[in-house]
Amino acid sequence: MRALLISNPNSTSMTDSLARTVVAELRSVPGVRLRSEFTRHQGHATAIATGLTRADCDLVVCIGGDGTVNEVINGLLGAPPVRAAGDMPALAVIPSGSANVLAGALGLPRDPKLAARVLADLLRSGERRSISVGRAADRWFAVNAGLGLDAEVISRMEDLRASGVSANPLRYVPTGLGAWGRMRARPPRITARADGELLGTDLAMAVVSNSNPWTFLGDLAVVTNPKTKLSGGLGFYGLTSVSGVKGMVAMLRLAGAGRTLWTLLGVADRELRDDDVDDVTLTSPEPLKFQVDGEYVDERAELRITCERDAVEFVAPSETREYGAHVGDRAWWIRLGAMLGRKFRALLLPRRGGRR
Image 1 (cartoon, rainbow, N blue to C red):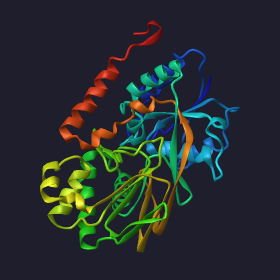
Image 2 (cartoon, rainbow, N blue to C red):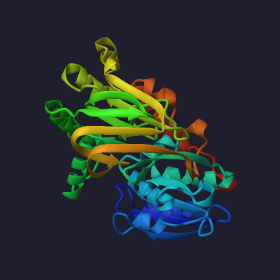
Image 3 (spheres, rainbow, N blue to C red):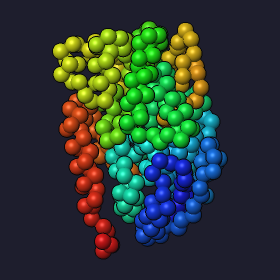
Image 4 (cartoon, rainbow, N blue to C red):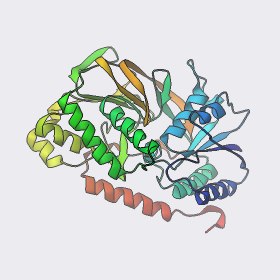
């Protein structure tokens, strides 16, 4: 098996030690022949992956965050019409970014060294699966695309990183609260249509997900569409208002907290949700910030988002082991315990071929 390792040296948890661990795990798999490329600038991973076929290599392994994986997917798929998944190299993810949503949604450990061990075992067993991807404004995405609040938060986090501040959940919380406060003062008025049907007007928030969860806040999953699957269509989530006490509880609920208040105050009546759609159009009277897979793009007054099913083959656990649809209904402390349990079990995974 010919494998190409594409590494982002600037991702949050990338170290020489991690690189050595990944290389050692991959080389422990019988028959794997490995070559490595490091990205040097934004968009470089796309350039490396552009036009690759199974004749060039069998597997592309990404060490980086969701942005690096996004670049590789955009390089492989290019402009529509897309090639069949079997004509392109399969993909694998070693998560070393700040959120690593796709790895978590696939059911992989979000600790990179544990993920490397799991990937080696998956390569030995030959376990693979195909996933859908979305397309928004000529960009493919594997995780989500959003207009408004989430893009505002991501844009401000990118400004902080540019000034030398590292991205972590403690930074996201005040940044998110600040964006929520500004949005309450001047709420967006987004109109959403899905598969030709009007979903809602004057929405304060609208996001489209390819995965469940929408994102992670540290080890806590932010779940908007618990029934959305990587193998299915896209999930739409909207809030009609974020004002007042209900608005505050709505934002808490996204992170899995505030369930009791959510029920008592009837905040669910502010939600709009569709877990399996193929074509979404978002419009706004004025341009709003737009993000794809955790990367700020630009400002848009209109955004069309479509789904390409079974587009990319991943070396990953089967669908039954991906992030569970039922998790969105669990309390946050139960979900935290489940995440810690998954990490502990990953530590105890049996090493095949007598390796310890």
